[in-house]
Length: 393
Image (tube, rainbow, N blue to C red):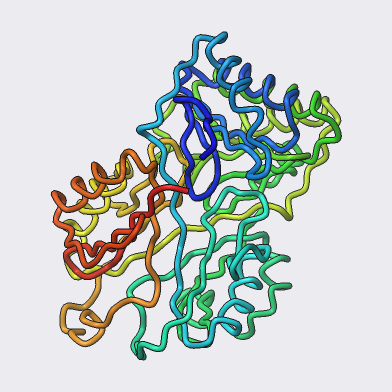
C-alpha cells in the first residue's frame, strides 16, 4: 500500500486529489507549480478548485503537490472525489470495441478498455456477456466531434430523427454529432462548438502551458465566467462546459464569443498552436418512463446539479469533471424494453473510505442493492438502470 498522505485517494487506479480554491486565478497558481514538477501530472482547473491526478507509475510528487497547495492556502477535500466510467456488456466484445474506437477516437487501454487520450471523458469498458438482450437499450451516448472527424470515423449511413444515429453490432447506439465553428469571424477561429465551446492548444514547454493557464484564468475571472481549463502534457484545453457559451445557459451579463476572442488572442500571443480537431464532447442519455423521478434519483446518487433551465432535463457534475446525464421520456407501453436489463451501465469509482456512505445515499434515493463483492456494489435505480460503486484501487 502506497502512503500518499491524507489529501489523496486512489480513484479508479489513479492517485487523485481535489483542492478547494476561491477562484480560477488561485487554481492557476497551483497549476503553475504542477507543470514545473512533472509533465505527467494532470490538472483540471475550475472556478471552485483544482483536481490533480498523478501518473499511475509515479506517485513521488504527491507530497510536493500537497505542500504547494498548502503554501497557497488551498485545502484538500477528498469527499468530493468520484470518477464515472461506462461499461458495455457484449457477446462480441471485439466487434463492439472496433465500433466505439471509431466513434469516440479513443485509445486502447488495459484489459480491452478504450480511454480518452486526453483523460477528460469517461473510459469505455467492454465486457463479455452471453445474456441475451435483443431489444433497444435504454441508455445511449451522445458524442460531438468536429465535422471532418465525424466524416472520417467511417461509421456508415446514419439514421434517426436527426440523421446522426449509429449502432454497434449489438445495437447499442451513439448519436455522433458534427460540431461547427464558434461564430463566423477569425477572432474565434480556434474554437469549436461541440455542444460546449472548446479550444485546444498545443504547447511546447511547461512554461508556455503554465502561462496560458494563468492568462486564461485571469481573463475568465475578470469576466466572471467559470471557464474549464484542463492541463495535459503538451496541451491546454479551454472549455465553456455544455451549452454555457449560450446566454440562457450561463445566465451572466456577458457575450461568451467576446471572451473566447480574448482567450484566443492570449493563446496566440504566447505562441500556442490551436488544434481544433481534438475537440470532443461525450454525454449519456437515459430513457425513463418517469423522467422527474429518475432524474431526481441520479441527482442524489451522483451529487449532480440540475440544469438551470426549467425545460432542460440535463444534470451535471457541479465541478464539471464527469459526464453530463440527459433524460428523455420512454413510452410506458414498451413493457418488454423497460424490463430488459441494459447492456450499458455506469461504474462510479469513489474513495474506499467513502464507499459505504455513497451506497447509503444511493439506496436512500430509491436505489436497490442487487449484489456486492470485494470492492464492488451493483445498484439499480427505480427503473432498473444500473450503477456499480467501485471502491479502492
